[in-house]
Image 1 (cartoon, rainbow, N blue to C red):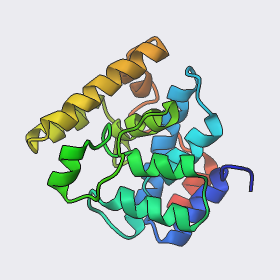
Image 2: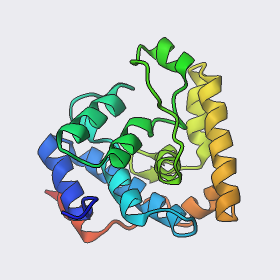
Image 3: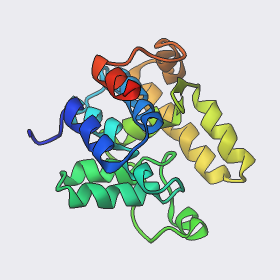
Length: 193
């Protein structure tokens, strides 16, 4: 394995961890969006691919907001590189600040995406609902309905920051992939098994 697991290795890790077909297809869809974003930014594409594919590995064991911590712990036990573990830990929304962590009962820690790869994967995830591509306002609206205005504001800010870096509104970029982007044959094969 190179520094970062490739697509086949990532999908195999998701499958072996016990992720459902639905989670695997979601992760593959997030990867398609993240790759589109990263193509015009100065990001490590192999890290973006691995981070997007593995961001929800924790959903094999947990479907609460804690899935990011569970997934990061799983990735550490697998011996994955720290920068990949960090993407998994920080992918929820546009990050979770100290006050949100306390309110949600999440252990203290750094959950704000800081590297370009962390930001790309987190935001690509914000723009995928199940296996459909949605505008960022979808995630913003869901958070506002839950009373999480700080989290919603962080998504808006992240969207603006990455859109500026890309040179175009990322809603247009993501939606150009269609409602459900074409997935690689590997992802389709795993989803169909």
